[in-house]
Image 1 (cartoon, rainbow, N blue to C red):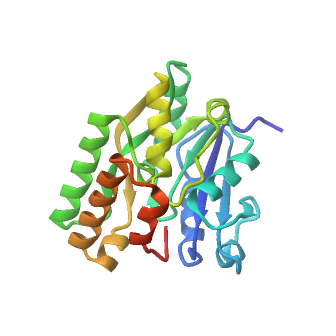
Image 2: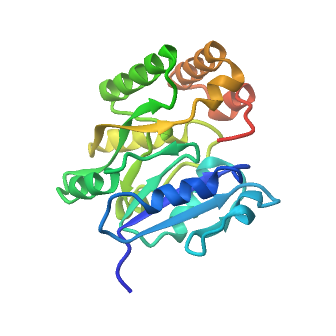
Length: 233
């Protein structure tokens, strides 16, 4: 068996309607390297896992919580590079080749992509641009920018801290504090606008900004989770 280069880890929560389209898309990414797709369901009914048609996708059940699910997926992964992908997000078509070339340079332990939102509405273009600019300035990309990381380094730093919110920020802060380097590609992942459309663009955006600010001030993510209610990832 050839070695696995990439492990794409999908933490899911009621994604049965979308999961097969996403797996099909990932299988057609431009790469000459072996990849594995690991779907980690956080729902007792395992409705997303039962909806999967592919015989090649690795199906795992985990206790609910994005950090817990991503850690469970990483524990099962065989790839040299871990890619953590939200179920409503698509990687750029050249993502795997670009990640492979970057990681081969050894000076970077991981990275992410700029954020794009699949909508023609001007407000979503603004949100995507501001998010990408923020992550370039502070070097702390969020999970919806599809964080990737060298497997050995992920294990070395202890993976994601299993907190209800801000697990992506916490991980990137640790990497930044350690002095290791990440790279943010200008290529955009494309994520669904469904969260903003469901909750309201202004409400969702202001809430997220407020939670980020409070977390930066030292408020516990366990307390912040009270103000963040969602039935999807």
